[in-house]
Length: 403
Ligand code: PMP
Image (cartoon, rainbow, N blue to C red; front, side, top):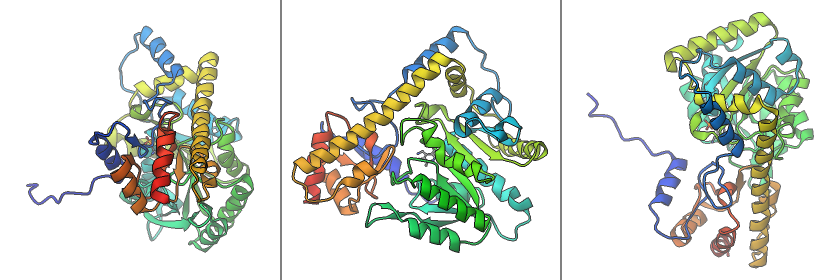
C-alpha cells in the first residue's frame, strides 16, 4: 500500500548534526544546532531545573493525564512571564492552552486562525507574513495548518542588520488584515532585532493596516539576559491596544528542549470571547494529541512558584545569555587579531543565540570540508556552540575561508 511513497528531503538543520556526528576530526565544531551549550560545549541542565526535579520527585507525584488544555497553573505563570502585570491577564481576557513547545504553539495558532480568524468567514485562507528570512519551520507549520504564507522584508544582507524601510514598506503594501509573525526578540536566524523605536513604528503600521500581530517568543531572555527587557516588544504592542496571538517556548530559557513546554495565548475583548476561544483550542488539541505532557510543566511551575528557585533560574538564564555575548566578543576579537580585513561588527550587533555571519554557501562548504566546522548553508552560526576552547580554532577557520 505504501510502495509508491517518495523519499522526502532531510531537514536541513537537523542534517548538519548528522554530518557532524559522522566526522572523526577531534577539532570538529557543531554550530548548527539551536540549543544552548556550556563553555565545555556540553548540553546544559540549569541547576534550578535539576533542583526542581529533585523536589518534585521527592513528593512522588502522580503520572495522571493533564486536562486537554494543559496545566492551568503553568498557563497562568507562562502568560505572566510574557505579559508581566497586565490588565488582560487580570481581567480574564487571555485565552490560552499549554502546547507542545513553541512549535506546537505556532501550529495551534495556525489551525485556530484557519478555522476562526475574522469569524472564519474569509473567502480565502488567512495570510501569514513571515520575516525574510525566518525560522525554517515557520513556513511548513503555517502551510500545514491551512494558512497561506508570504514574507515581508526584514534582513538586509548589505548591512547585516534590519532593512527597516523595506520592512515598513512591505507591511504597508501587504493586504489589509494579514497576520504578521514577529520574533519577540533574538530573531532566528539573523539575530537582528528592531530597536524599541522601530518596534513602535512597526506597531503603528500593523494598527493602520488592521494586521494581526502573531508573536513568536522562543528566546525570551537571550537578547539581554533579562526576561522583562526581552518582553518589551510584546508589551509595547499590548500598550498600543493590539489583540495579540503569542506562541511561547520554554525550550531555551529553561533548557527544557525535549520536555516540550510551551503556551499559546490570545488576547481577547471579553471573558465570553476568552471562553469561546478556549473551548475551540481544546477541540483542536483533543483529536491531535488528547492532552499535553506533564513532566516539563511541573518543572516550570516548581521554579516559578518558589522565590528562591526563580531567582536562581533568572540568574542562570542571564549567565547563558552573557556567555553567548562574551563568545561574540571573543570571536570578533580573534578575527581582527588574525588580521581579517572584513568588518565583523555584526557579530556583536546581532542578538541571542544566532549570528547571521554573511558567510556564503561556498564558504560554509569550505568550513565543513577543510575545517570540520558545521553550520547551516545560510551562514547562520549558533553562538551557543562557541566556547573559550574552540573560539580560536573557529576564528582561524573563518579567517581561512574568507581571505
Ligand atoms: N520559534 C523559533 C523562532 C525557534 O527558533 C524555535 C526553535 N528552534 C521554535 C519556535 C520552537 O522550538 P520548540 O518547539 O523547541 O519550542
